[in-house]
Structure formats: C-alpha cells, structure tokens
Amino acid sequence: MTRASAISPATHAGRIRQFFWQCPEWWTFVLCGLGWQAMLLHGWQHAAHCVHHAMAFREELQNWMLMVCAMMLPLVRPAVRTTAFASLWVRRHRAMAGFLLGYFTPWLVLGIAVALLRRQPWTNNYASPAIACFAAALWQLAPVRARALTACHRSLPLAPSGWRADRDCLRGGCGIGLACVCACWPLMAACALTGHALPAMIGGMALGLAERLAFRPRTAIVVAGTLALGGYYTLLMFA
Image (cartoon, rainbow, N blue to C red; front, top):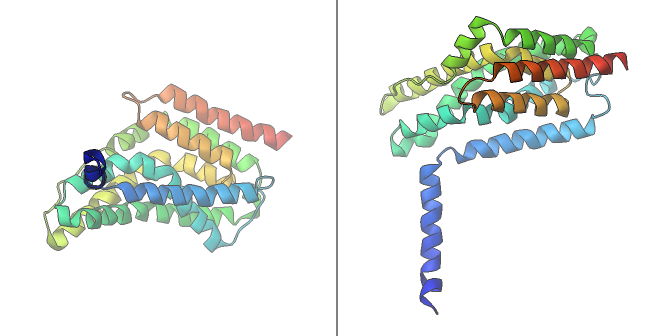
C-alpha cells in the first residue's frame, strides 16, 4: 500500500467534516431541490393547462409552500447561514430550523389567501397572471418595497441557549419572512396564478437571483423582466 492510498480515507473524511463545518446550511439545499423536483413534475404534468387547472384548497396551498421552498430558500440562504454561525455549535441545526419555521409562517398566511383566490373560477385564465405581473412591475418601484428589500438582509442578536435562543430564531425568521413577503408578494402571487407554470417560476427565480445577488439592486432589469412575463401571458391570453 502506498503512502498516498493510506492517507486518502482520512483526507476525504477530513474534507467531508470541513464541508459540514463550513456549510451547516447544506440541508436547506436539499429542501430547495425537493421543492424544485415537485414543481418541475407538476409543471410537466400540467404544462398545457396550468392556468386552467383548478386544484383543491389543500393541494393549492401545498404547491404554494413547495414553490416558496424552491424559489425563496436560495435567496434567504445568507440569513440562514448567519443564524447558524451566530449560534452555539451544538444547536446550529436547531437554530436554522427555528429560523425557517418563523420565515415560512408569513408565507403560509399569504399562501392561504392566494389559495382561496385561486379557487375562484374567474382567476383561472391568462388575464389574472398578466395583470399580477404588471402590478408586480409597478411594485418594484414603490419606496416601501425598497425598504422591505433592505430589511431582508438584517440580522438580530441571538441568545446563546435555552428558550430565549429558540424565541430569537423564530422572531428573526418571522421578521425577515415578513420583509420578503412585502418585497415579493405580487410576483409570487403571479406565479401561483399561472398554476405554478414553469416559465413563471423559472423567470421569477432568475429575477430574484439577479436582484439579491447583485452588489447594487438592478431595479431596471427586474422591472423589465417582470414586464416581459406580463407580456408573455398577455400574448397567451389573446392567442
């Protein structure tokens, strides 16, 4: 046995341990991937009639939360990572789980409203997502949205242990969740009104990444992309 082969397992094990230490939020990527898998399957099955496909309230709400997992977890990753590193090592995953529980709560409340709206027959057409996209483009220019987008990046101090630490994680996640809902609700509602169609979800994900990952907010690009989505569904409406 050579020296290289003798130390290889230890080296690989060390690299794996280092990865889990440096990237404690790894399992959020798994949740994101599962969300996209479910949404891609749904979009593939109903590609020809997503907008006109009426679902039961429970199924609509379930697809909404899967969409939030798929589209929003990559955007909130920095906050999840900050929560992990601001917590004690032994409670990192508990802290991240508490943060995400608080984060998803405002999205769940909005999802209930959107699911009830989607149950109305007059929303099952191309006009509804087209109007929602145009409204989302106007919302991009609102000062309150700019303040909400800034609040999506804030961080709060966390207690080191005990119920106060759990409370702080829930409160921090809920606060950032409320800010993200305020910033993104029209576009996310538009995606839901398309029946969670793949063009809307992929376009919305691309616009979210372009805005969040840029050094400076690319408002003009995001507005133009949202208008393009609205134009796409307007063309489908007349076609």
